[in-house]
Length: 157
Length: 196
Image 1 (cartoon, rainbow over the protein chains, first blue to last red):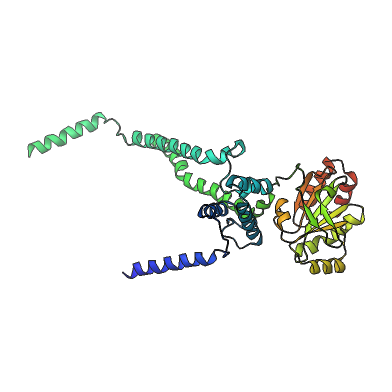
Image 2: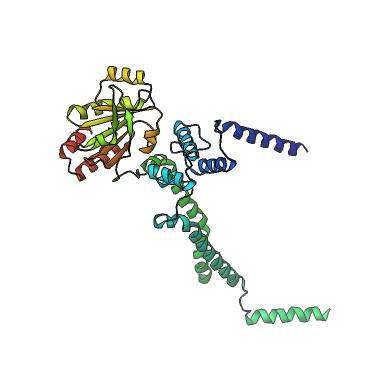
């Protein structure tokens, strides 16, 4: 019981801490859809001056400016793609947390599959070598003789 | 007995395998931890593209500065602010370039006008013109991360190089020098190499 309470307590600390860490700004949106796009974009775009934070999470000045920029563009009726394009033109693909699919990023996209396939090959080969290693060697004549003797001994009893 | 030894040899390698994999991963980790700054090495997508359009008020005079003012001269566009410590560090180098005839345009980034003016009065003004980007929106068009940053722009208004951080850092001098040499700006290249 105490353990469960502890976990609940820790979870509470964790989640409240997160809530406090998120920057507070009040943007008003025309529609819930626009708001959704806003949050999606600020989640997917990198805060360029931070270590691995997105624009939504960061309190950095540049992240604030970029949030405002996204908001303004949405208010102007720009689409999600247009805004992403806008950011990439200025800050490069690096601004995207999800890198685009193009020849330069193929290794990035296929790398994990490649490594998985390689791992699979290794596992299969390992298993094969294991099963062949555990196969008992053929018994020598002596051994066959001994087993026969043992059995006959038992029968005798 | 001989047979047994032969069978043992591959198993030694096999036993050392995890350790070897770990060693490789450890090497990658160390490299990764020591290269945090490579984040800033991502090249600007603006290189070899026209400088972004802008139309901003001047800091010291009436009037405005636009991207049209970049045409016809090789220009360094220097993003700076009075609150920016590294801008002070590079200021002597910027002044040195200006004194020797390099055209430098300032982009006063998210700064208070009075602070900016005082800063120039105290430390000297190397700029042939300074545009005020009070809210930093023009800087977003330039893909600015922070101050200082310096762009080398050619006569046609194309961005040749982006220097992030003080212009006189070894990496930036190297990069600017290479760009200047490539475009045949011999005088600029000479000046830059003297900053080393």
